[in-house]
Length: 444
Image 1 (cartoon, rainbow, N blue to C red):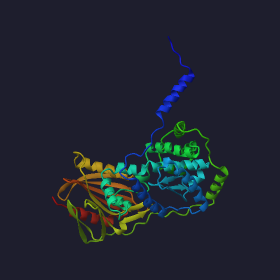
Image 2: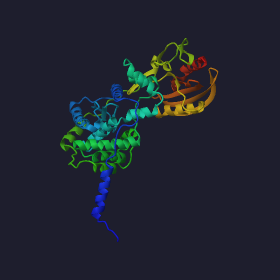
Image 3: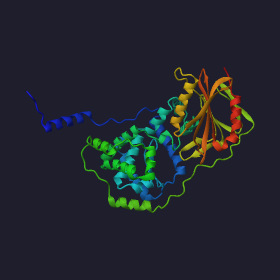
Image 4: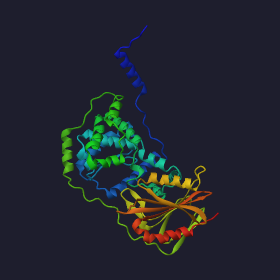
């Protein structure tokens, strides 16, 4: 006997299957940082951001974004981080949130939005990045070898800055770093969690997707700023509408249009943003001809005696640099000139070339924009060595950074020195770099 199913029965079966699947479970991924370290890192990053970016002081605008933000941050999906919300005077269309909750909206984003729900959508999306801990997740994956010892030391010794410890290790925390660079998977998850946050407080989640798609189709060069850090996961409206089906039915709002128009007029009245504080010009970096000895567990070397040393507590590495080579940027402290020295624990059975290639991959992952320019074999301290030249963006305004990575295979692991200079200062520093390499003497 043939059996027939009615359309209603088929739809019922599909609905039951959808309900059984349930919404996608969203939770933070692999992370070497604690939630408390996320908060500490975010506070230090916020201080650095506000040294360069122009924070808007208009009380009406600040109260407006604070009210929206606090409503979104009070949802359980926001994970209870101590969020803050500020506006920066910048006509590019962008927003970003730092680990632990400091969140910033550009005035260009407020000007480009069509309604309050679109602003709330961007804020919910950024809150989702914080709640899912995407920034420190990225750092953890890219620095799996280096981070555990530094974070353990920071947990025991509270006298130093976590930010400073990470910079000493050569981990890039600047504006182009992984701290604010997200994968497409992270963007998809932030869209989904942002949808849940918006829906819970009554904003129409589709407005978040509509705004992002508007930026992609008509945002022009200003809109591209957002997507440089937030790659489009694809078909956002469809994904948000699918997520809404799992949520309790309710009537959504896009906000009060009259109030929003007044906010846009107030943003327009700010006029052109003041000139942004630029990266510092490069000072003289001339090294002293007098040398001082530095000793670590595996070797001894000499360095100019007018350079400072910042050593890790285990004696397995250090940053050694002139005072002028430590640069305060918008998002932290960077090494503009000097050297990083350390031992990377052995990974598997790879030889010198394989271990060096792995270290280079980690450096490039932590420093987007870094590129290998060439490599050659040589000798350091009587041992076979590799010398790799890399280029990246210098923290000094308008400069290219040249990094010489020198590696030697040792019983303890991969010994490495990174000699750092802005390209224009190489004539000043090349002699010191050559002296440092000639002075290296291994102890066993």
